Length: 476
Image 1 (tube, helix red, strand yellow):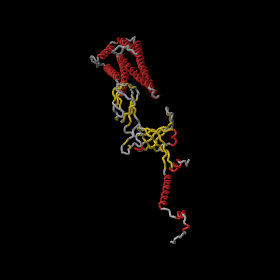
Image 2 (cartoon, rainbow, N blue to C red):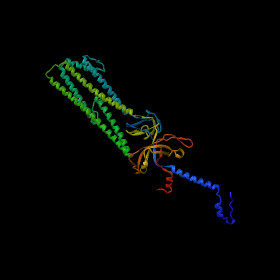
Image 3 (cartoon, rainbow, N blue to C red):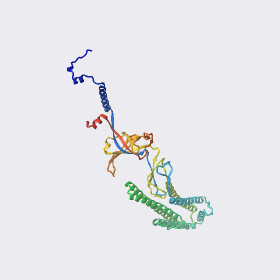
Image 4 (tube, rainbow, N blue to C red):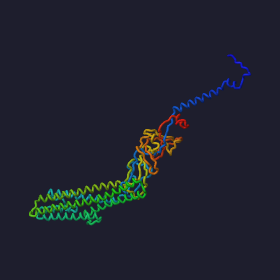
C-alpha cells in the first residue's frame, strides 16, 4: 500500500477529524439504537391493546335461590337455624304453634267417628229390614237402632198405624227444619241457640271454630299489611299483602255463604219430603191397610237417603280434616334443598309471623356462580354477547390474587332507570370460572355469593402503534 504524504502546512483540525476513523463503540451504539427503534416499531405494529369498559357486578348462585316463607300466620314455637348454617334437604328450620288447629282436628275427628258409626248402623238396619231379621242387640250402643227395627216391625203388623208413622215422620222433619233454622240463625248472629248434645250444636261449634280460624288469619294478614305500610315497604310487597288480605276476607265470606246455602238446601229437602208424605197421606186416606212391601220399600228408601246424606257429611269432614292436617304440617317449616341459610327476617321463639312473610333464603351450597352486571347506558353500544370479561374483586385485589375470566352470556333488551339516582342502565348476566384464587403467598381464596366485583369487559382490540399515536395527538 502506497503511503500518503501530506504537507504539514495543509494539516487542519477539521480535516484531521474528517479523515480520522470513528471509534468502534460509536458504530456499535448507533446500530444497537437503530435495532431498538426497529424492534419497537415492529412490536407496536403487531402488538394489540385491549380496550376495556369497567362494569359493576355482583356474584350470584347459578341455581335458583329458594325463599322460605310462612304459609300460615302464627307464633314461633322453636327456631333451629342460624345465619350461615349449612342445612340438608328436609331439615326442620323452625316450627309454629298450632293449638287452634289441634282443637279443630279433635272436633272433626269426633264428628268423623260419630258419622262412621251412624252409617254403619244405618247399613245394618237396612240389612235387617231386607232380611226381616233384627241384627241389633238390646245393648247400650245399639239400643236406638234395636228399637227402630222394632218400630218398623210394628208398622208392618198394624197398618192402621201407618198414618201415625207418617205423621211422626213429618214431625221429625219439622223438628229437623226447626233445628236447621236455629242453626242458620245461630250462624247469622254468631250465637248458639241450639241445645247441647245435638248434632246441630256440634255443627255450629265446628262452624264457629272455622270462622275464628279465618278471622285470625285475616287479623294476621291485616297486621302484616299495616306493618309493611307503616315501614313504607316496596309498593309490590304492600300490594301483595293487600291482595292476600282481600283474598282471606273473600274466603271467609264464601265459607259463610256456603254454610248458609247447605242449611237452606237441607231445609228445602225436608220440605220436599214433607210434601211427599202429605201426598202419601192424601192418597191413602181411604185405604186402611198398607202393603208390607210398600212399608218396607218406604223404609229402605228413607234409610238410603239418610245414608247418602251422612256419607256426604262424612266426605266434607274428611276434606276439612285433610285441610287441617295440611295446615298443621305447614307449621313445621323444612329446608327445600341442601344449602346455606341466609336470614331475611330475624325471628325468635314467641314472635308472631304473618302469612306469606319471608323469613330466610336457602343458597345452593354446591352451586356454580354467575355475575349479575349493571351496564351503564353510555357503555352499552360496544358490548355484545360472548365478549370476554376479566373480574377484579374488591375483597380480593387483582395485584395480589389476579383475575378470574368469564364471558357475557345475556343482555337485557331494554334499559331500566334507578328511581333513586335516575341513572339509566342495562342488566347483564355473565359466566365466571368458579375456581379458587391464590395470593402471592399461596393463600387460597374462594369467591362467595354477594361479593362485589368490577367486570372489565373487553370491547375491542387496537394496534399499539395507533394507540400511542393517539395518545401523543398524532392520530385523530
